[in-house]
Each structure stands twice: as structure tokens, then as C-alpha cells.
Image (cartoon, rainbow, N blue to C red):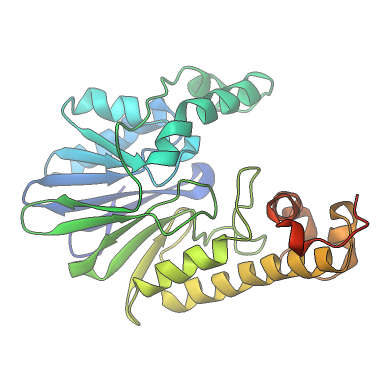
Length: 283
């Protein structure tokens, strides 16, 4: 069920992954931002859009390539055959591969969503950009901005200037705040703080920010999360400069998030350090 959070911007918060699917409306139609985690789940999204009765979907935007944001693409294309699928070029290039990896994991498990994930057709965006682009909805513009790498290499945020709102994807997460944002096996922890600096530059003191997961937040929340991620990045650099190996880093100091949540952040952070940031010996 979609709830209006700003002028002609609606968000549906789904229990599965606590993921947000959003709509931006204009005279030319609707932009659907992220499409949920399976074809079956996306059919419910399509029904909710039609129930809302505010127009036809003319464009889909994937905030990044992860399956909980892209696996509904084909279902939305079936409902609105002329819909254009947009994503950052890195995300689009990785969508099919990321989808196959997820399907392989679900095939080996007993997750209750196993069958619907395996049955989903994976469809990547075909309209891509490298830095920024704009969608024209007639009476308003919607900006797509790649602020840099963070949660993935292909993150984008959706800015609706006249509504003072940003749909931040998984660069910002509210529902996992106790355990931290999503430091996955494809994250860029050393660059994430700088990407959030760009996002903060798009916000005003009164902006509404819709995270990829969880409830809408304000600029202060984004700044606090940016600072915590910044501590993770700086701690990795400091430990590496002292010669602490990655295998000992989680136990070597305190972290702003639970250590078990930071395995990929530390491993990826160490891997992305330049030669000059590492002190020998390290293993």
C-alpha cells in the first residue's frame, strides 16, 4: 500500500526485507523506483499502483543491482510494455550476474520465498548513465544522480527538487540501524562516506530522505550515518597503517557497528587500500 510522503511522491514499505518501493508522479505519468524482490512480489506492486489510480508507469528506476530492488522489472514491463528501465551503467551491467548469484543461493536453501525467486525472470535496465541524468514528467523534473560508490559500485539517488525529497536507495538504511547499513560483499566502505557527502549536498535542512529499507528520515539521520561509516573507513586505514592484518582487525579495536556486521566492510576496505596506506608485515 502506497503512502504519500511528499507532493505526489508515494512509498510502499514491504515486510519482506523491509524494502521500500516508491512512486513519483507528474503530468506525463509515474516513475516507479525499485521493483521488489521477485516477479510474484512485483505483481502486488503493480496492483497497488493501479489501485492508487494516479496514472500509468512510464519509467522504472533501479537504485542499484541487488535483487530486492530489481527482480520485479520484468513484471512491471509486462504490465506497462512501453516502460523505460533506468539504472546507473555499473548497476545495469551487473544486474544479470547478481541475479544469478542470488538464485544459486536460494536454490540451495529452504527460504519460504525460494520458488518465487527462482521463477523470476531477471531483466536489466537498458537506459543508463554515468554521472547524472534527468527524467521529464511534464510539470516536474526527476534527477538521477550517481554520487559515487558505497553500498555497491552502481548506486544512484533520485532527487525530486520541487518536493525537497531524495530517494536514497541503500546508500542510506534506516531499518538496520542497530546493526548498521548494508556492508555486503560488493560494498565500497572507503568511498561510501564521500558518496554520502554528495548526497548531503543535495539536501536541505527540511528534506525528506527515503532509505532503501525502513522509514523516511531527515538530513540529520543521513549525516549521522555518514559519520559512522566514516569511522569504519578511517578505522580500517588506521589499523592497516599500524600493520594490523585484516584477519585481526575486527578484534583489534571498537567499531561503531557490531563486529559481525563488518566482515565484508573490513575485508573490502583492506583490499581497496593503496600500497602506501599499508604497513608491512601484513597477512
